[in-house]
Amino acid sequence: MTTLRTFTAAALLASSATFAFAEDSTDPITIPIHNWSSQIVMSHVVGKILEAQGNSVEFVTTDSQAVYESVRLGDVTMELEVWEGAFGASFRAAMEQGGIEDVATHNAVTREDWWYPMWTKEACPGLPDWNALNACAALFATPETGTKGRFLGGPVDWLKHDAEKVEALGLNFQVVNAGSAAAIWAELAAAEKTKTPIVVFNWTPNFAEAVWPGEFVNFPEWVEGCDTDPAVGPIPDKTYDCGNPANGYLKIAAWDGMKDKWPAAYATLQQVNFTNAQIAEMAKFVDIDEMEAEDAAQAWLDANEAVWKPWIE
Ligand code: TMO
Image (tube, protein in one colour):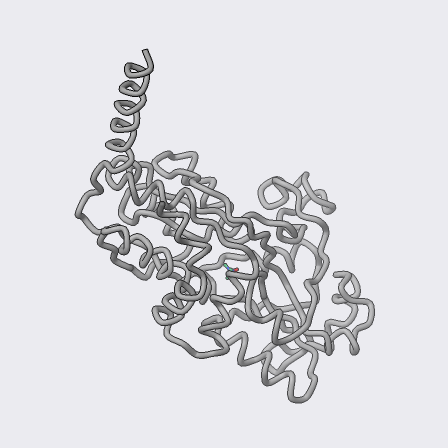
């Protein structure tokens, strides 16, 4: 009886082991790269982990909205940073079409919105309330924006609908889109020298919070549908009459064919999970320490074996 039971357990173990070690395809896993530092470093971190497992990995630079359609079609294999504020709508739309899977949610809590460094509040003490910001709009005027305040937004593919927000809330601001994330940091550094008030698009987790203490503007609270349904939100006939989610998710998405084609890599991907501090550090390696993204990823892996080794066991 004992012998039989032992035998059965061994057979079970053997079959589950076979399942766990089902061979991944030798085709490369494709990881998309976008235009902000933590996403680029995290993609290399996960790429190196999958390579250590024996997979081949390739990187492609893609638009950060169109990528959800690419994942859905299996042209790229995953997306490691699905920010609720910037990409929730594109992700939801792709999920409705099918072919893309919500694999995991990072521990990180995210926020993306209009933000100012603390010296701005000295000039406009009613902040962070959005009505106070609007009353101070003249402080933010530039030659480019005339009598209106300038809001320095992110690159257009982050699709923040800031112009719609300006219109919906009657803000005395004009949106100017930065060509790159680096352009936002350069403008902040320049404004710091003269303590000139400035309001820009920023997000957390990010390195910037360690360099420039600051706050997000408090717009009317995000409610589901305020971006699509005029009846939702405080202004009855407007969409985008709200801020972005203040406690947004950060998800991992994958092509739904990944689990069959690369089962071991998929099992690892389900374990991947980063915190705010870890993501801010990934950005810092590049934006402050000026490391190449690949070197930053290697440095992060070397310093954090206790975090990621269990993901591949
Ligand atoms: C998508 N982003 C993190 C730049 O807000």
